[in-house]
Length: 89
Image 1 (cartoon, helix red, strand yellow):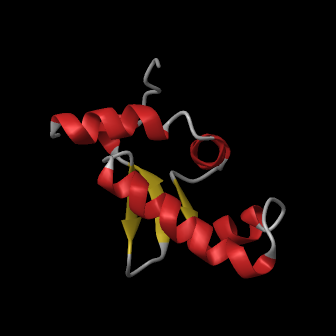
Image 2 (cartoon, one colour):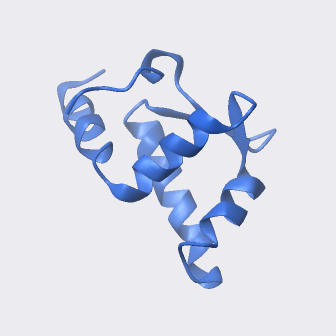
Image 3 (tube, one colour):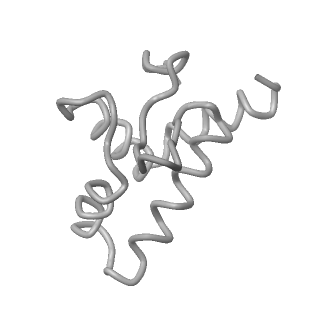
């Protein structure tokens, strides 16, 4: 991981929306969360018109920071293996 990515990963973990998604991924029964389930859960926090865009952004940022993985074929969001343990901030 590049130093800038490492810094970004540390910072992004502090964002409430990102913390919400990480927590959700840790409490679900499967090691992943479907895109649709994440959208449904996020509808509680945002207006319906903003939900998809918010999820796209946070997943894209999480992938860049190498914290999240997203499988385009199955629509599953998961934690990257190397980042499953919480990082102290």
